Amino acid sequence: MGGPDVILSSLDRAKTQWYHFTTIIIAGMGFFTDAYDLFVISTVTRLLGRIYYTDYSGPAPHFPGTLPANVAGAVNGVALCGTLVGQLVFGWLGDKLGRKKVYGWTLLLMIITSIASAMSFGSTAKAVMTTLCFFRFWLGVGIGGDYPLSATIMSEYANQKTRGAFIAAVFAMQGMGILGGATMSIIVSVIFRNALHNFSFDDGNVLSTPPEADYVWRIILAAGAIPAALTFYFRMKMPETARYTVLVAKNNKQAALDMGRVLQVDFTGAVDLTSTASARREYGLWSREFLKHHGIQLLGCTSTWFLLDIAFYSQNLFQKDIFSSIGWLPAARKMSALEEVFQISRAQALIALVSTVPGYWATVVLVDVIGRWVIQMVGFFFMTLFMLILTLQYYALRGDPCNDAQFCGGNHTAFLTLYSLTFFFANFGPNVTTFIIPAELFPARLRSTCHGISAAAGKAGAIVGAFGFLYAAQSQVQGKQDKGYPTGIGLKNSFLLLTVINAAGFFCTFLVPETNGRSLEDLSGENSEQPPADVALQAAYSAPYRVKPPCNF
Image (cartoon, rainbow, N blue to C red; front, top):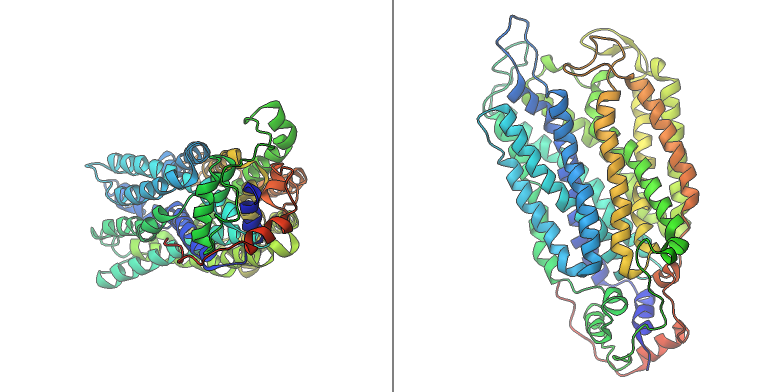
């Protein structure tokens, strides 16, 4: 009769079953919500500026309002600050209390705060923005908790052969969430635009932003609660992962019962329910033993994720500014407020559709074929290459200034193609692999915590990208920068800085090992001296068993 390694070996060798796909959907819908909530704000920030910060009191000509620099930074970045906190806190709780016990908390927090964000009211613009930032911070905490828990749960449920693809599929829902947020913004803005007058700002200053526009951004933000609410019940019904139950809780009986449910096989006749993984050495986080075995690995995970997110989030959150500067979007005063939401959302949806989403799913298909390390190296290399080309050919591709802060001439199609390719290789590359690898390298008792630390390092990079590049990308010429901002280093130099950052990510990848094709216990050093896996498996499957009803979650 086998011990705990029978259950672990069975998980590694299990055929792909319906419960694997169920877990992907349940965990993936959380990531759909995460990405929707984090990135949809960029489709409505200009609308917020028009509604709350347009000033008609001075002499003509008037201009569409924009969020002040400090407010724009807070609205765009406060959720990232909350995400960093949530990754650390819920990552730690996932190891201390169990993945299942806290998994539903993150989703519930996202549902409540998505709705609360849409209900940010106040008698002044400052009051509305302060309330919005407060709720978006707590929304970020819920989003942050989803990172370590979803990655850890999927890695511990998955079999060894397709583990990378399953974890990548969960994270690929981030791309669908980005696309979903842009699509929702298109739908809502078109409905309101067609139902109301559609004067450009030049044609009718006040009429270009009808009072009903205040409902648009609220509906868009509130819609983020829908996918989370749809999967909340099923998330609460998921059993604890067998690896946590065996290796951390040390309850073989419960692990056998739980895996009997999901694998539809009764293991109780083949597993010694009293033995424990006594041969496995245990050490704490930051202990000398941990640093000896996993210190370099954790440094590699944190550094690559930090550098990746500086580039990834700065490009995502400020696409609208790049689109405007090359003339892909009309000047703000030539559009109504609702038309501007539509144009920004359409541009972001197109980028997501042709580059972001395909990149995610290319990783899903190939991650278990060519490996995580190779994909991450290739991704960073091409991100560096295309960003370098954009830097060196910036003026030739952008064109010359003509009117309304736009540029004529140049080759805008080539500019957008190169820009889109950086997104493709971010997602067919480090944006997915930095999520996968920390969920595989570390011991079960520290796995969620270490993933949370790695993810928090990434969000620290995202905060640098969101706040830093908001100012850095401003024009170097006094008077050409956005209202309320100091002069910056300009888009060309910002691209050059991102080139250096991507190159640094390429070299930091050498600190990360390849995890493809190895069991979690082998990678983490938790293997004990037990009978060979095939013998244990043969014992498990040759013992009397009965088919169990499908897992009810």
